[in-house]
Image 1: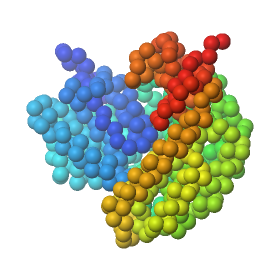
Image 2 (image 1 turned 90 degrees about the horizontal axis):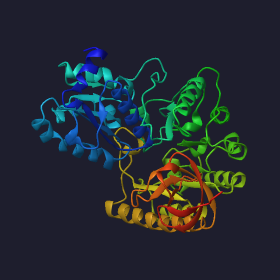
Image 3 (image 1 turned 180 degrees about the vertical axis):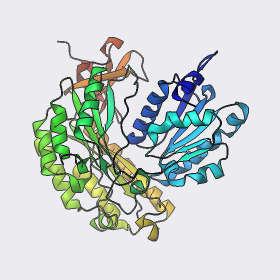
Length: 454
């Protein structure tokens, strides 16, 4: 089936055909789903909010931990009866689990029509074309041999969005002992900086004002054509007319250079927020994780970052119950949390990932103890987050208004420069603009304020 045939298939007497996305995991997956949705929309296939209304169901998966992988299998299982009832329904699995398991998914779930790996997102339209013409199942998980990122293809975006993700680097070379990313996302590959800036300029032309630069480790970025590094890429992007705010995720502490720290002093449009995963507060565990830094290194970098940007918000990732983590190691993690006073933390119980170096270690922390430690970390972080948010009261922040509040349709929601959710009274006309808001109330997950009138 040709592209024209797919476009014809996308239209029916009852209206356009539709696709439903169920996305698990990180912002990279969110961006991949957005990209696939946009590419399919060019063929007249519209996105819907319910799988029961869809002609295509795409489950975009994450295998970085055991729990989201288990959720993936449960999610796939949910659609078996729907597939039996709805003739012609296409079910696809994409993302990290698809990359890792490949043909095994089709053997386990024979009603799945396509399995699309992490390096083949841009092929979604061609794959759907083959499936609706009768060729199925299709499993496509090969990595490219040319050591470059799959060419970016512009796609239609939601006109009501004012923020956008832009991939700058894919894959990872770090091989942290617990992490499966290098195996399912491949080795590091950077995009040419001109491609990145051209994409950003095109996004600004559509009304985007905030850009988030994406990569498993953005600090490792190196332009394949001229060697330009990540700090210089940020400086280059900051000179583009029309860009209000630049964010980036995720950074690796060992690659947090002095030059990148300097960017927070030099560049006003660079967000006052950094996500810097510490993972553990024990040097013994950090070494076993193959992270390449010490607790002392980490704290020193946080202090230098805050010395050049005093209002910097710091968020992190924490793993509890890594093999060999004893009570003193765990207490070290709590100590680091209290010293740094993270604005927020994403915390998880260690789970063995097949094929990683840590999988060869004895998983000697009991499930009950992992749960207890996780609860302690999350309780402490709740207190630290509330402490941080309370400090914002009476401060004035420029908030990019992005939509109506979920809890109160008479309020507008947005994010501050520190990436904190801020709600305030306002009308829909404010959406898409930058609004000065004085913070009056603080909650665990958000702030509330009043608009400062000019």
